[in-house]
Image (cartoon, rainbow, N blue to C red; front, side, top):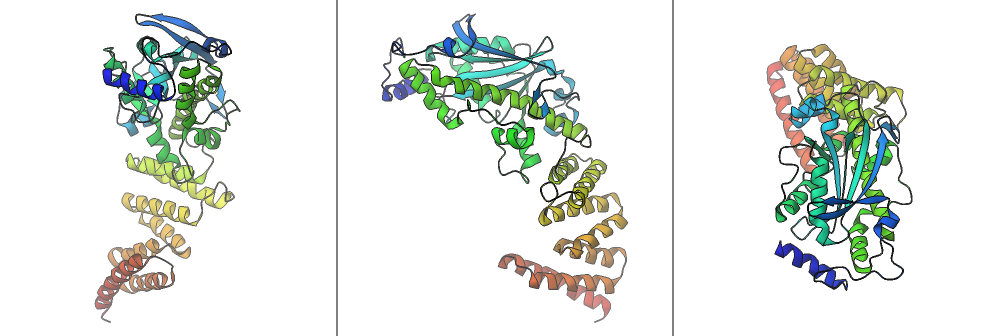
Amino acid sequence: MKTNASSLADKLKALGVKTGNALRPPPKPDSVSIDSIVAGTFLPTPRGEVFVAEQTFPLDHQYGSVSLLSSFPLSLISEWANDARLSALPLSKFAFLDTETSGLSGGTGTYAFLVGAARLIDDRFVLRQFFMRDPAEEPALLEGLLDFLAPCDALVTFNGKAFDAPLLRTRYTLHGIPHPFSDCSHLDLLPLARRLWRDRLESRALKFLEEHVLGLTRSSEEVPGYEIPWLYFDYLRTGDARPLSGVFYHNAMDVVAMAALLALINDMMEDPYNGRVQHGLDFVALGKLFEDLGRWDEAARLFERGLEFAHSTGSRQGLDESDFGVAVKRLSILHKRRGDLEEAVRLWEESAQRGHLYAFIELAKYYEHKRRDVKSALKWTKSALKLVEKTDMPAYARKYWVEEIGHRMERLKRKAGI
């Protein structure tokens, strides 16, 4: 704890803030306190008072184009996360959490000066934001947060396993307070968002997902995340809370966006054909996820729906050529694994017409090993070699395929007696 205090004191000293019993100098005459900028109350705790802002939302609240809560249990998400408790818990046992900090290092010198947390209370989605006006109020913030999260058995964050949760555990440990996450399940939405949208969206940042998946654009109150630590240090130096209004807005939006994102992802996984999925690549991504879960029949159906988008919609929502190839390849392999070779061959032939090399190789294997038709296998192998020779690819890839196809061709020639 001594190391932590000196670390923050060094930062504040560099900004002209005096250290000692009161880290903040007396407010300037034109300064404005936090309770004049953000509606909230001062909550008493065993470690002193902490400022808390609260917002409530009805259960049917729409966040952009998405409902705030899903009507399905988290069955498949639970399976993906390998945590059976997630599907067994009611939503009232889930807490959504996000922190705003004095830096991104996450070490003992980093404070969570604003923590937003939300959960269901009496059929309302309640968001509370715990703010420390001074680093000396950190124990009170932690106590207030601990009390709010006490009824919860699961934590939902966005990149929280790597940052928010470890940071808060450190702060609780430094102050000798039991942290509220010791026995909680923890669902981090970032890895799941990457699985679903890494091939379609250029960014998986929460704000980007808000705009391109949830259909919501933040207002002019929004402040960039990288500015937030400096806005807090300015507040500690001047006592003027006016610039922090945008920080509270940013934090609140992040927390509520997590709930909406979880609801959307769960709806997409539990019922992907209800109209929520609006892009062919999203069907393909879901298909890959279901394939990894060993749900091959459903994965095949999802790949097929993705391919339907390629034929029935414009380029904005369909698949480009490389995406189409990936979907057909995954689907054909699934059919092959399930023993439906007739459907697999149909897909390989369709893909070969579009110039996808793997399809030529699979057809050569099929005719050689399944049909014992060496002549047809040799035809597909020769076509594969011609495709490699005319396709623009890296030298190392070309060398590999020329050698690989060459070995196959020599073997087939020997079988054919050529």
